[in-house]
Length: 418
Image 1 (tube, rainbow, N blue to C red):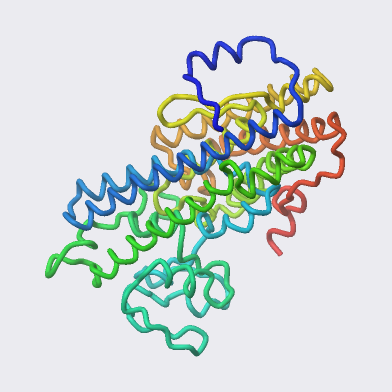
Image 2: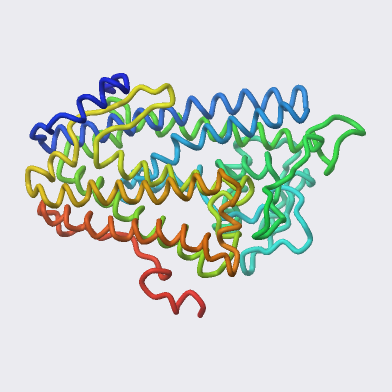
């Protein structure tokens, strides 16, 4: 079902005038991209699982670095799927299992004594790895073996508290990097490879159980991603929801674009952390890779609109696009939104490149860092501006019932400090 072509060919096609698209064709492309991007998320997670196996089989600085590199690679396709949130209930109901943040990491493993936690979270220092028997809300839980079932069935969001994130990418990130205790100073988490060593070489205690948790979390991530790939494959529930009712599919596309662009990314993930000067508001606070998450989130929004997705192997999935549909309704609106998406990606590219060049995202959040603040705000402003053009696209297509997610940081800044 997925239409895949090589990048050079696809770019040639994209340079030609867009043919008139139908809603049926546009939502089919949307579903094809979802199937491909979630499929790439799955395959890169499987590679990550293999690197984790090598780390546990032969703990060393080299195998830990290899596992971290695999994690970074796995995040790139996944973050591009975030534009499928907000408009697809199947994705929204599932997403918290794989990408929930921020987390009270003390639920999982040892943390520094002064680690902040969510208010009234009595499980914030539970430390599953150190305790084979757990007391959860008065119930004794046998955690002698840490399994995917234990994590998903009893630990994730334990006590009904969202900060008790036990599964997904960020739990794995924490287990690979450890806490970043540098605040807004330079440096990411520095978990030593010896946290997975055998015998007397083990640091941090409970190295075998830490390996159990890391393995179980990676296995659970794979099974969760397998579920979502199936949802977008031929006959899958998510694909059917958007293709059997193309108008609902268009609603999902534009709702996801606008909500991620405005309330989630510009607001909750960027403006809020800058207002609070708080590195705990980073999306990837252990690895200091928030700049990459922001970049790929923006790219995912652009992918949905232009009807193209570049796979890790360099090939593309491409087809009739929302851009073509909007252009047929109002060419000026399409031109403005296309330019707005390009402006956002330019700002996010600057943010990414600055972080890769030595000023990490948490350093940009530091009070008094005017350069960092300007880089973040340039991206926030571009995302807000492109959302206004997304709203114009909604109107051009006659889909005025769509509402986007908001954020106090953008809509009512004073409420952030109340």
